Image: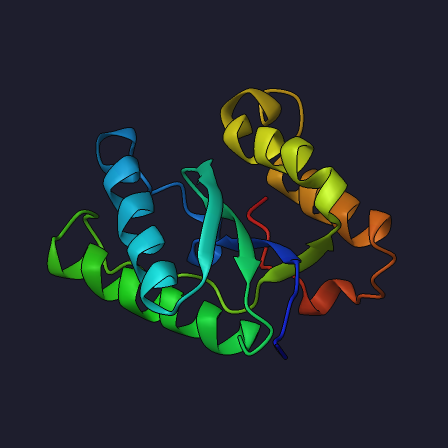
Length: 153
């Protein structure tokens, strides 16, 4: 029987516009459940989701037909509308343009899940900027600072 078999693991990272720390502990779990629903409705599998008040991490197992850019765009658009409709932030919420997408092999999935789920502890020692730049370096991704997230000083 012919078929398509794949293991595509993508670690997504995206930030709140202007890196504002607006994702509150009181509703972040509900947000992550909502985002998980978006991913599942697109027939993709969420393996881990977590984040900080200013950014989110998702580890996904993707089907080969998935267009990452379309999935991220829909995830950000729908979750933005959800946050704004529920008036969870005092000002209009937006995700910042752009995102990071980092591929992983099957053997590293448990470590990446642990990394995503331990965001709060991890960021006690490293800023988001340091974290993101280390991803770009570790994955050997050429970049120009002016095209990275707008960092708040």
